[in-house]
Length: 520
Image (cartoon, rainbow, N blue to C red; front, side):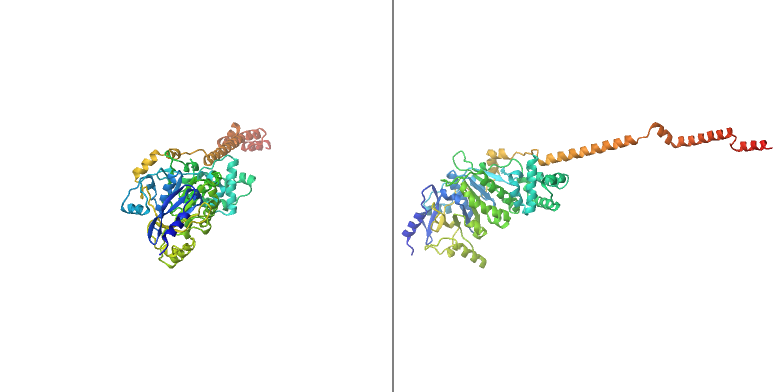
């Protein structure tokens, strides 16, 4: 029998923090919930990122929902990637039932249903705030990475951006980029090579094919105006709570390039636009990526490198990133080592490979005398998890088998009518959902080429007219060249000649007969 008092003392000491904190639940010992051993989450350390892992159906998405609610209550804005489509319910109040009542009784907590201030967002034209970015904002480096170009091809992309900057050609959407790409490979090739050097036709062809592949995954919807401002993710609602932005990406599971494109741009924009903050009392923004294994399994190497870099650096900007996935091994080790909070729901051991993963997972947690971690990972119930985190000094807290409290908002999706009601009141929908088609590289180059073609046609017409005028015969030449006139001239000429010869006595038969008379 384990010492309950020592357990309570260890948990209480490990999960007591100086600043603001929220209660996630209570620790479990020998299968019983110990309400006195509360598990608290310090707001100050949430910019150190986190992991929520567990098999399907173990409650990890609801844990994400609970943490988002607590953050909103404490005026921390939240961005949630909703890949399964079951997080929109955070905008509506939940409802109690016998299981929830029993859970809260064990935790010695009071359940209070509540709805939270929510913005619904989309990348692909669904209902909600449309998130977009211009090609110019995306930049040559990120564009080359998402297209997976080599150094030579990346150099061509950088040259295109430089040329567009120098000639005031705005790159807003993909059709602008494609138009410039086609222009430098054809009509503008001589102009470009004179200024920037030779360009390989094979390079421009490869880039064009990669861009078309990106278009086929729906990227045309993402690139364009009006581009999204990251400050709109960090809004505080009128009641003082943090706004929860739910990005609905249920239709992106088969479009990894588009999702990678968005993630690259979002992370880069957040890092570039947010100032260094140092240690804040609470984060400026916390981002949750649900079903993150879909990102890591399908993402390009560029995205993985970008995530690794951002995770290491962005916490100094006051921003936390949480990955929610089925298998903790889905997250690259270089990223996993940067995650301060770990919430491990149950894993299932169906195969030898599963057992190996469970053993590796158990080894990643602090040693404890209260649990056999490797065994416990497969035995936890729904809504239970192993938790450890870093305290203010960066020291891991004791590993705690925890019963988590349930979400206070709805644990289901919104109806279409509810979605319409939220969007009708949204200031961001009115701001970003207007279609804008400003004059950009496509229109400018098209007009330039049409003007050049028209000028060429006019010059050709003028040359032809001049040549025609130069070769036009005079009236005398026209008369002289007429076949009837020629015949008449020949006939008249013969008559004149014969008349002259006749006058000289050298003409035809009549002269010949006369000559006989002379010699007679």
